[in-house]
Image (cartoon, rainbow, N blue to C red; front, side, top):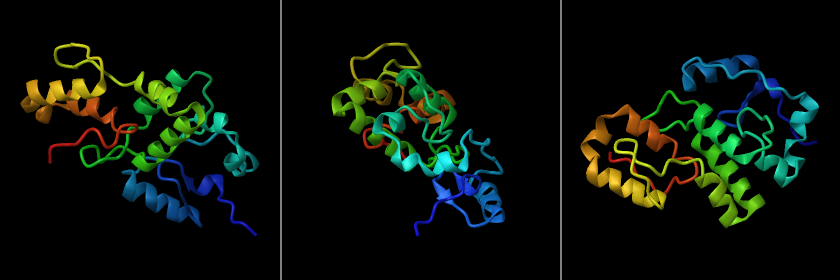
Length: 178
């Protein structure tokens, strides 16, 4: 018999299942600074069927909230705004970066590598948050910031917030200077 996780004992931010409520509560306190995820709008039966969803339904579903979005740009904006990845510079963010990377892989599989990249890229800022210059590529924008505004970037919450939104789908192209 296959083990089916219980929706009320599952941390959607980390994709971890607990045997009892106390374990989940302890996890919320230690990993999420006491933050408790809002209840999911799925029954236990629907939750158990997630692995059998079509690739399209999985691609159009927030990997954390498990809510379906009709338009991909709206979903990507929601994910980046509501579920920033937990990184060294953002320890109070709640979402494990692997959850976002897995979802990005689903988007690429469903739409194809080129279209998937365009869908995910359209939500990223390709303009410098300091001087508002818009660049043709994400890489050019990052290079500009590190050359022209590096000292400001290292001290600024605006730049750290900007870079955080780039990490989920481009984890290997942006390196934090630590």
